Image (tube, rainbow, N blue to C red; front, top):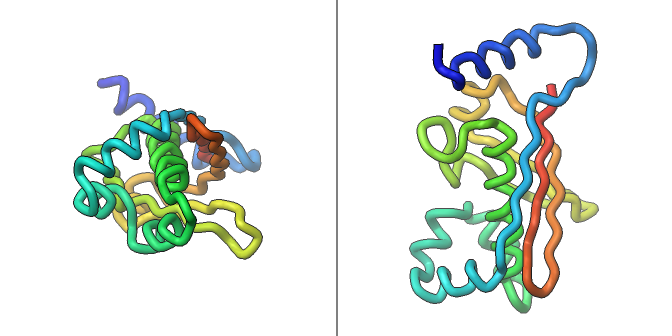
Length: 143
């Protein structure tokens, strides 16, 4: 049995527990905002459309400098797949995860149907921060 198979088995067993909320995974990511800025300058709209949903693009582009907001969402998506223990690939793509802010400005995570099915309707809490140089995010996958 592979390590990934073992982890998935353990997660399924945890999800059957009636003991209340539990943490299934934690992910964290940090990125230099200039790295995202340079990537957008080189690859333009093609990169933005590959990484971010139209809702995310609209949110970021309404800001005077959208790059820190793109970097924050990039970092958030990385943190989420780290919490899942999967990375991007077979079970999740960049567009399978969408970060939207609620009416109070708090970021919330929404998933495609394929991610919901594979990860059993995941609930993920997310926090995103950025300063002049860096964007960071932490994700907590709970039952």
